[in-house]
Length: 233
Image 1 (cartoon, rainbow, N blue to C red):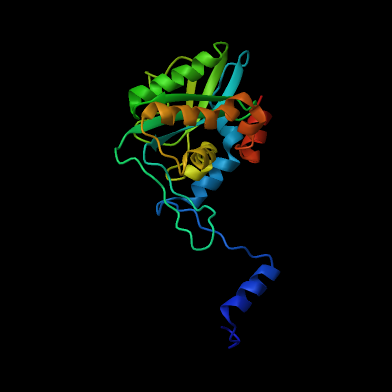
Image 2: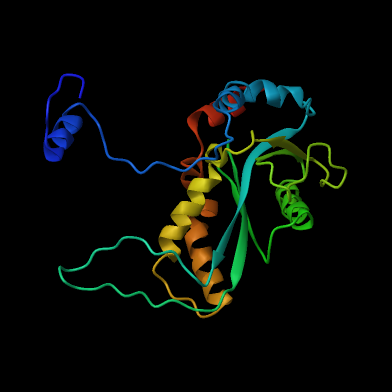
């Protein structure tokens, strides 16, 4: 455009590819997201962990946690078909939901999940208790977003040995568990579930590799988060 050169779209795509360009689908982000806050959180994670003043004689486990809602209405994604063949997907018309609460430990690659009927402050406390019970000798730090049904730092109702470090507002992509839900949807998509127990069975099959194989869970964790967590005393 600057030099008045006219190129066909196909030619533009060719040259963009030659210089290393790639067609990508942008990930939506909230208009109020603050890039500076995201950068500060990433750069200062180690310092934020040290400020918590956790007991030096106890193991500390650092979890990233999130929730996802799965229903009898499954996702439709692109799939292969023969030319001229229409792809039809049977869908359940009733609305029933299952909320999965999940957490991944960023150092050892542990994973914990719980099926719950909904999301609420009380249910969030219950799942944090499950994390605390997973190792009664350890202190557990949970990094999660600032949703209204998540406890605030210092909440007296938080289970013993549970500590909270909030993510900056409007930045779910900084939570590695988001990628876990996307992989789970790869298994549930294009499926017809008539009942919630069928959905739970499939969800369990999709989640099982993450709690049975630490390397699979750790593959979700950003490298900078893993190394900063390992660097703290």
